[in-house]
Length: 183
Image (cartoon, rainbow, N blue to C red):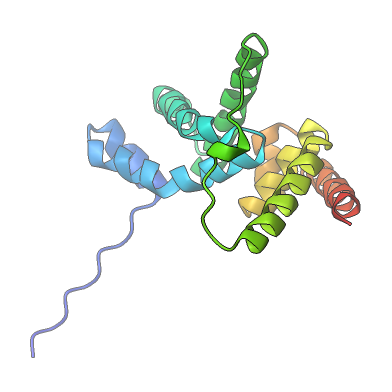
């Protein structure tokens, strides 16, 4: 029986970044594949409209790849990417204040699934969204980076330009306010 071939090691983000700097386009595609879904969840949770999430993810990656030469690895690539995504979202909010958007009616929404379960899920989602809107910007971003993305407080502090102790306090207050809101 011939010996089994060793499994190829999964390249780190740093290795993919180095490969991309060397002209390896598939390395960039792998970075996008690896982080796009988490970035989209973060942006949606931070208040991006569902219809805008894909565009915001794309804009975040465009900005990130343009600035990749300045990435020094002081935090994880994902943390740095979420920071850029937060800035892209802030820019989009500023632009949207100048534009008037007419939302589509509920009769045009997709209605898959059990109607009762969908209604319960929609109500919980709406209450959570309202609860998130009621948080301060910093509380909301800390909560999403911790609860949704699973980042450590030190990573959150680096991404948001604060201390890990302050990130803990913001997270604690966010959780407390969301629990009260969801009752």
